[in-house]
Image (tube, rainbow, N blue to C red; front, top):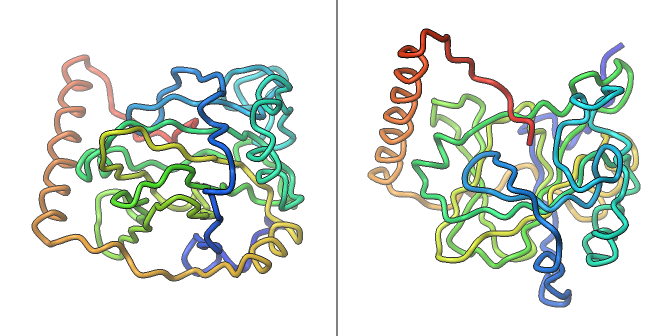
Amino acid sequence: MGYITSKALEETGYVVLDRYNQALDPKEWLDLEYNDWKSSGDTRFAPLASAFGEIECNGFWNHKPPRTDKDGVWIPSQIEKAPNLTRRAQEPGANVGRCRVIELQPTPYGDCLYNLHQDDNNRLNPDGTGWVVRGFFNLTDDKDSFFVLRDNRTDPEGEVRIALPAGAQLIIDTQRLWHAATHLGDEPRYCLITSWESGPELDAYIEKHHGVNHVESVPLSQEEQDAGQAEQARKDAARAAYYAAKGKVEVQAMSEA
């Protein structure tokens, strides 16, 4: 039967929507309760919706009963502090799974490449239902930072680098694409991440906000690209040596975040 997917994501696996006027909203993310949950980099997360409405970030399949990343339960104490963020996550009208704000500390390009990962959004997702993708709404004005997307984790061919000013809005098939953020600056980056089920509601939202599936990559010199690749290879080798010393086989696992 196959999954219900979004045509807008078919070609490249991502769309960039109209930029949101973030300056009109209060900085609600600063009032939320965060968990020290590590994903790709030095991170914390503030959940707005979780498996059972508790302030935790675990994958829905790790709960009892286990299920896919859909039907998230909104957390009263969090959404009371962040009504605008909640409204934006609910605006598409699509089924929401996990919804949370990520706090990412400064992350150089080489570390970003090492952090590249795929998400496991569709574990236990029944065939014939909507494929789960993720929205990324940048909250802070990170003008020198960018999101990195790749088809192959270690191959830079076709790499896309998407700018992250305040109000940048992306929807990404994060189970298809390897992804992570390069965050340059002294302050943390904050971003609202929402799991959405693909279907007519999400398609209409993408169309309403003029989603495009090709953008010009943030410029990066060949020297910077080569140095990033070298750092990724160095860290990969160190990790492989660590596992080998313990007599374990390294597994390139999907992220739970």
